Length: 193
Image 1 (tube, rainbow, N blue to C red):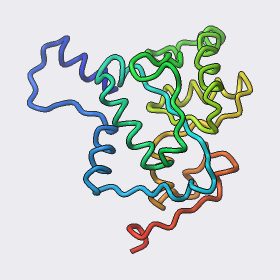
Image 2 (cartoon, one colour; image 1 turned 180 degrees about the vertical axis):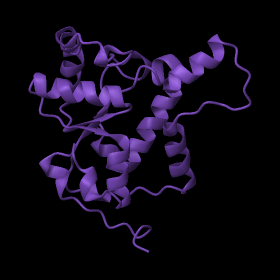
Image 3 (cartoon, one colour; image 1 turned 45 degrees about the vertical axis):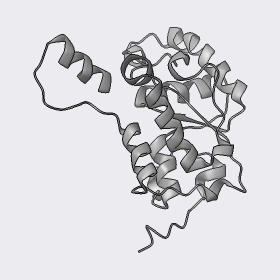
């Protein structure tokens, strides 16, 4: 959606007096400013490893490596810097998952899964326990790749792990968590008031 709005404004030369931003910029900004206070202590003893997918539409086609850096900054604040494992290649050079640009809904499932084999291998090479997806299409595609290629890596949206680290993740928001995180409840003084 972010890319579509930016591209539409440019293509149709639509006058506007606003800047199109992405939420990952704000997460990083709010964490730096102390307005958002995630707690990564929950993962110190667990040592659960996370990697992340750089969404093509947000990173490569829209904001570039700076937004990928902001995304990682926010992730590390949530899971602990020592528990983040980057894919290689990454940032603007990260491999596409194969779910974007309408491919997820195209009806060419076998072709999409075959294309996604590269992403599945890349994820497995990190040996991360979880993949944090930066967009819905990436989430759906990588979730399906994990099942199809028996990767057994849960795929979660960033806000899920952020809400867990803030102590506000509800029981009905744990659908994509693995058994290792299903019962984790973080006490966070900021949200206990």
